[in-house]
Structures are given as C-alpha cells and as structure tokens.
Length: 338
Image 1 (cartoon, rainbow, N blue to C red):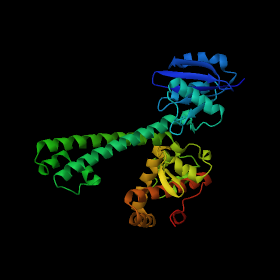
Image 2: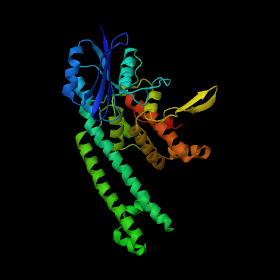
Image 3: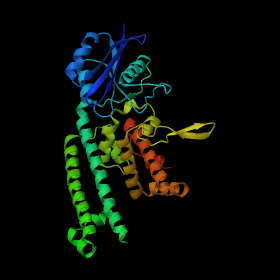
C-alpha cells in the first residue's frame, strides 16, 4: 500500500497528514516544530511513503533538509499556484495538509524548486544585499523629496553622494528639515558600506560557472547581476522553453483572455522576484549604455509608457539570458533587439 503525506508548516507547529491510495486518512496529527519528533512520528510509515509535500512561505529550510537527509522524497509546494475548491465552507490546517497529499497522489501538485543546500546561503546573502539596495534607494528618494518640497530640484543620486552635512547649512535654513536630511544621509552612507562588504564577500566565495560566464557579454549585466541571475536560476535545464524562464523571471503579462477579450489578471506574483529585479536593473543599464537598446526603449515609450518600456527591455534581456546560459553563446544584441 502506497502512502502520500502533506505537511502544512507554520512558525511553531506543523499539521501532518498521511493518506492512502483511496484518499483515506491513515495518520493525522499536529506536531511541534521539532525535526526529531517529526522523524520519529514518520518512522513507522517510511517504507510505504511515496512522498511528502511541505507547504511553507518562509521557514522550510530546516524541515525539507532534515527530511531529505533522512531519505524521504520531499516536494515543496508552490503556494502561489495551489488553489482549493472554492465551494468549501470550512477549511483548516488538517484539510490543507490533506489537500497537499491528495494533489501529490493525483500527480497534480504545483511544485516549487528546492535550491541545493550548499549554495543556498550565498544566494541568500545576495538577497540581503538586494534588500539593502532597496533601503538605500528609499532613503535617497526621501532626501530628494525633502529638497523638492523646498523648491530645490536637480539633486541626483550622484550629487547626493558628494553632499556633506556641512553643505546643508548654506542650503536649508530650517534646522528640523536639515536634521531629517542628515539622518537620511547617515543611513545611505552606512548602507553603502554594508552593500560593498556583502559584494566583496560574495565575490570571494563564488565565481561564475562556465555555463553562466557568457552572461557578462549581455549589455547591462555586470558581475553582481550575473551572479544574482546564476544563483536565482539554479539549473537552467529545469526550464524546457524560453517562455518558461521569462515567466519565472516575471517578465510576461499575467492576463486572462476569453473570446479575444481581456477578462482579468492572473497571479502576477508567480515567479522569482529577485530575477525580476535583476533583469529590470540590467535594462536600466542597457538603455543607458547601448544606443540600439535605447532606441528600442524610446520606440516603446512613444507607444505606451516608461514602465511598460522598461519591462519590455527586461523581457528581451531575460530571453537572451536563457539562450546565453543554455547554449553557452555570446550575447548578440542585433538579434535580441532587431
């Protein structure tokens, strides 16, 4: 008899359900988040278990790694793609875990990618850098807004880098506004130091694999963005087509059409937000340094708007990156932006 398991993981406990081939519940229990306890409860069923599905939004590393090391076949549920029957009147954690096992039994489970454990920490280090970059941008925008309120424009990010606290005395009379800007500048300088430190540590630990080295030939992609794309992509062979990779990078529209009419939007959050950021960032640099890509961007802007034009450039770069990584070829700008 084959068994199928579902685990609905929470911050301090897990709902564990095992079902058989007839969808009968064989085991059902809520357990404390203790790997030793969970393995002990699963031990009597290990030979019959076909697989275990873990559903979690953020804290699955310890459980998935522990189950895999113990020899269990583990599947990570794609929480953004799983939908329960909407006619249900009542659901809870036990029903959710049972539904996961049911989808696994039917071979209908939308799965997430379990990134290799050995490379996960350095990937997460780059993700932390990304978060710090976002915070730096937020503080720079806050300073620019303060100047704009005073009717003082033209303070670009480059100009703000050269701005010292003493320079503010001659620019701003109000002591409170000046103090607020000094606080933002202090945070920007601190974030700069930490971002540079993380970049040095990542570059010292990991190098671009041969398969991903041609990423550096793509206009707008430097070492940090290339490493981000490599570490977020994982094994390029898991994407059968270029459209799947572009969708994973959130570079395609999430729209629903019927009878050639738009009926709404699908889940735009499906995919990898860090890859999406990397390709938009690459598009910004590519537009700045490549005349051909800049012309493409300007044509798109004339037809739509800047946001759509940036996404169109990012989409082009994502598709190019897929072929560059899969086929190990140098980027051809004339083909990508014909």
